[in-house]
Length: 243
Image (tube, rainbow, N blue to C red; front, side, top):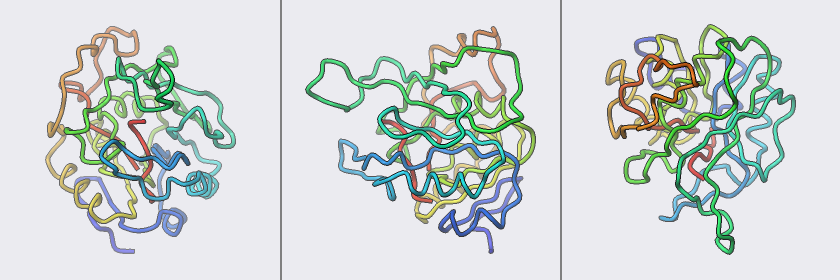
């Protein structure tokens, strides 16, 4: 299959990830798949394929037994084989959730699957402010700095994101000097991801300063590529992020 984009160690495919994953050579999956919650933003934007977790589970089954990181939501069944649940603390921002309650969700789950993870031992909570909607290219975009911190502890080799969205996983991997492959079913996001990945090592577009960089992993050091934070990571049926 001919790539949509192939430059500087980053390859993007436009299509259904379930039809492509089996033909790809990669080492670790880092992805933000559809959560199965029929996501809809304040502006009415929806995430394709988010009516169920079928695409997520099918992609992980095709990928098994290789290691994977997958974002998720507390109210939806977790993937099979989860070894640890990490938490993304999105800061003082109450998400939509149940508007009848005086609390709004300000965190998301991150599932660790498989073997090969490494790095200095740390807590299971990643603190990184969410992106403001006006600064994002995708309805559920994640901060680049958050993905960098996760990928730093991933097994070596090529990073695969089968639900690429606007390409944040690819940008983060490239910032860390790693090769990456992304798959996205919506061509408009392939175009956005390709543009972001072609901009160079650091993706400064729409970046927000994160006043909590100094807290990085409680290790007293900032990761490679953390000058400005808070661009996104995202999703073959683009999956939800800022929920």
